[in-house]
Image (cartoon, rainbow, N blue to C red; front, side, top):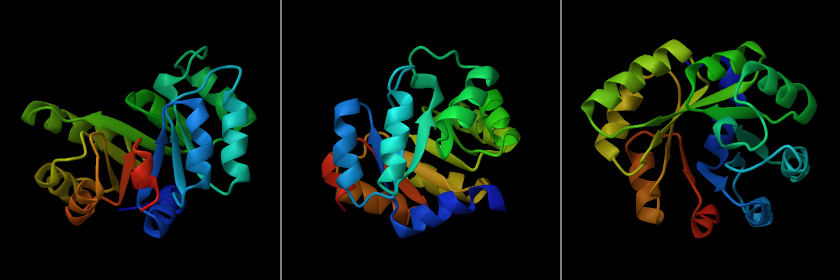
Amino acid sequence: MIGMRNAALLNRMQENPVIAAVKQEERLSVALKSPAELIFLLTGNLFNLADLVAQSKQSGKNVFVHMDLLEGFSHDALSLRYIHERIQPDGIISTKPALVRAAADLGMETILRIFVMDSLSLQTAIKTALTAQPSAVEMLPGVMPKVINGLCRRLPVPLIAGGLITDKEDVIAALGAGAQGVSTTNEAIWAL
């Protein structure tokens, strides 16, 4: 069941399922000019995060900050609260279920990032996602249509495929398998 908290995220992915994942600050300008509706900031620090988020919002993009990859912030509830209240991204991404739950308690949209390497990690990811109750789950690597399809059937939230997405065929395969969105650092795909 998709709740109200993730309605904006789902609507943006329906408008354009390609999500610009930005790993380097200087590449943000390319993402802002792209048709991508959502930006995943996989970079940022104490000095530039507020500006990166503000630029994204001024360009009409929804921006999600990957909490685990920020520099200079601790990865705890206090830093999360500061980011929510002072920097105001649309949501966060994290591999940490407790951080996802804390962000949801603040009213933020949340994306739980999971890594699927084998059947055990798949089962653990499903249990973690059901417990953390994120707005969406981002599965890496995103080039396993059979696994994407299985996760989509078992999770009550949208699935985003990310990692190793290199061309249009990867995007089509992930979406065809049931993913609601595809995140990629490949700038050529942002323009699809």
